Length: 152
Image 1 (tube, rainbow, N blue to C red):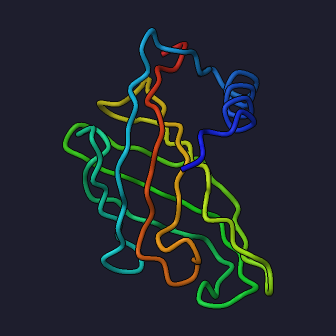
Image 2: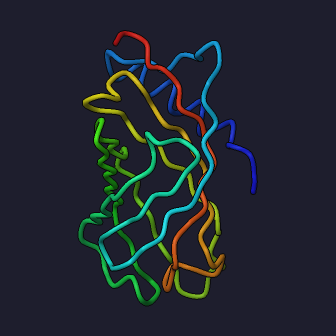
């Protein structure tokens, strides 16, 4: 899997520092997280990772812009992962599949911690499984880092 794109990390840091009272800063030791997310149905996600804070049942709630089963299609992702200790909420991400275009199997995500995870941010890159989706995805592999947010 590719490493996290420097532009993603830079964009998140600048966006959070400029547009919010919360900015991303490096922990002395960020926590590396790897795992997979599977889809038992069209809106449920099962997260299984090496960190219990990112293991549990989530939901995917895209906005308008379907159909997802054919190209072209577009949507804005809304991803929520709830565990016993708190919730992770994805920053909105617009996505599109263009007719005739090759699909990039990698995508970036930023999840903001709430509840017991207040003050934490999960920055990750994911890879669709199989790599030829969307549409028809079985899930995705995820690799990223949990870092502390400043000002919390």
